[in-house]
Image (cartoon, rainbow, N blue to C red):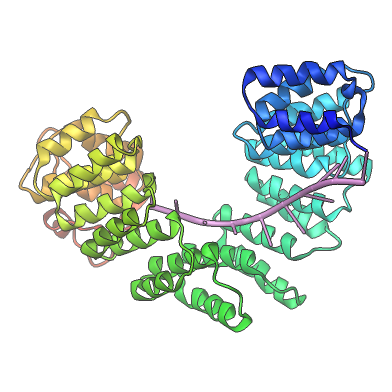
Length: 465
DNA sequence: ATAGGGTTAG
């Protein structure tokens, strides 16, 4: 029933050069296909997977028509933008849809809500929510689930919970979204409580639910909960796909069971960059730098391109092994071959590596040359290096002050600062140190004398109130 | 007539 012209158009659409698309555009107008609502729908649908920009170009030219393009066409583009790097565009189109006199339908809402979540615009999301309520779509399960996700994506977990509580028919996606929401806002215990409730109403978790639950155990550093989830995976016979397998190996690694993590890693049928990276970083964190480096090489041999995170792992391995030259080479490789812009963590690894090797001046140069402010981890690492390599005075007094400025509530920072204090600011003076700490609500650990603090300071010397 | 939701990292 569709004309041959339609076929031609769709074929033409596959070629993405500007000339072809302009030809296509004039052809649509010439053949009056811009009056055919079904054609527009199909056309926009096919076109979206080719190029969102050109689809938008065509769509914008159809927008002033009377009647306007069908809601289906709007929905298609709104969905495409919700997955794109410009999710705000779906919000704009959502309001345009209403401005040309159309009404959003039950398909429109999930897409636009996803964009609100991704843009973290809870105000707009809330307005969409009230519209959903007014139009009577609040009982739609898909819409309910995306509302939940929109609120948790905006970091408003209370409202996400409210949506969840008010839902009349929850399914496994609702439960998984609630669990994931709690994990994302660093409330892993609440995630586990939701899981308890889920079991009590006999809703079965699937692999997506279990990924979030493993993440909750990882955040809690609780191997027991993690292992109980592992046994559930085995008992229920859920396939260990990449996402679930990676979450599992990460749980074992972060909870200190590197061997178990390695077993899971080896058992995976499919591995992605994340699986490799998490395994490499895990080995590095457990002091197995050689294994981390050989796995990194193996990963490259398997044709995987390391990303920013992979380099953090390998650089930390080099730093623990004291492989200064190798670490420098990896850093260069990251920048020059892979074109990755170093982050604070990468510079931190370099400072740590050079500092441990006693190359204080060179570590200092890294801090001074990098394009961002040092963070507290890097400063501690640097000041520790000064202390460990016989520098009584911190190489740069400002860095010592900066640490106390960024993190005034961590007792260990004062202890560290006291070790390398300059003569001008007497942190070695017990009274000054005590006053400074008192002012910050910190107290000396019981059983640890001030003399001890001054002569042999350690992280354990102080407790936070 | 064509379409929708949930998962992992320093």
